[in-house]
Image 1 (tube, one colour):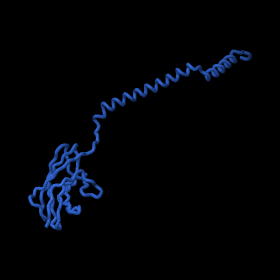
Image 2 (tube, rainbow, N blue to C red; image 1 turned 180 degrees about the vertical axis):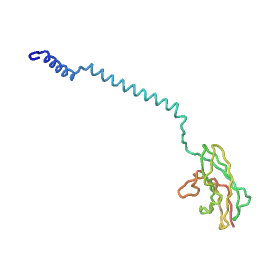
Image 3 (cartoon, one colour; image 1 turned 180 degrees about the horizontal axis):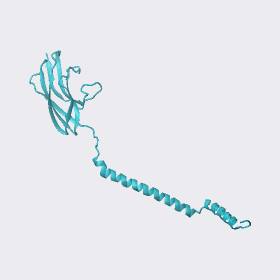
Image 4 (spheres, rainbow, N blue to C red; image 1 turned 120 degrees about the horizontal axis):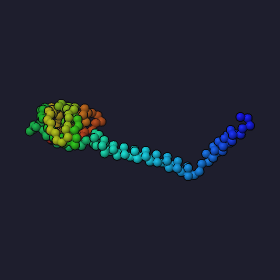
Length: 180
């Protein structure tokens, strides 16, 4: 109503109160900060509990990839090794885990050159954890020149037997022989 100062007094009280709100007292601010930090601590505690639950309940059941460790020995089944024969090569392979590997054979001359033909190589062989035994044929080429030769049983990554750039897991010497 005109001339009624009640509205004006409310308006001036609101202005004074909002000016006062902009300059809150320090204890009020500390209370707000404490409330904010309490929320942060609750969130961090929740994440910590979830992390502990993951590591103790879930982690042990996830597959863990450990480095494949292989030991191997080999032998040839033929008494006298001469060029032009096919003989059996037997691998005895120890593995710390199940894996799929390739099985090859190398026939190295005295200069270290591989004279093998790939006959009898196994591109993919399933190893079980523990000890494995496997026999396969190996051909001793008839074209070998005179000299001393080494026959190795080679364990390769699966499907990489003799591949350029591939490295063997193991390559024990099975036998030595000489060609006159």
